[in-house]
Length: 106
Image (cartoon, rainbow, N blue to C red):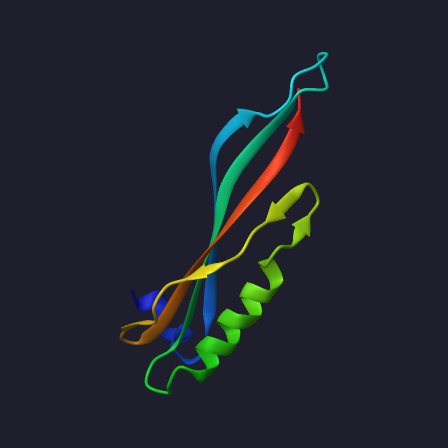
């Protein structure tokens, strides 16, 4: 945990992408069958504790705005869900999950 000490004065975030199940949503000739892949993007935001939650809430709202119903290439994001704010010294944190889907032809 010593490597975390320099970070104790600034906020940081962790982004994780997890693929879920896929399903075929159309039928047709080879190369025109749509397979829909679902998954979730997880964003964890950390700010130094002891200074209130305003900075954390501002960062969380900004991150949610980036992903809410956004399209990135062939990825369609849905509505983010946020967890309750957690406090574990020296950090306060919040997590959000953003479901997504992407289509691929086979």
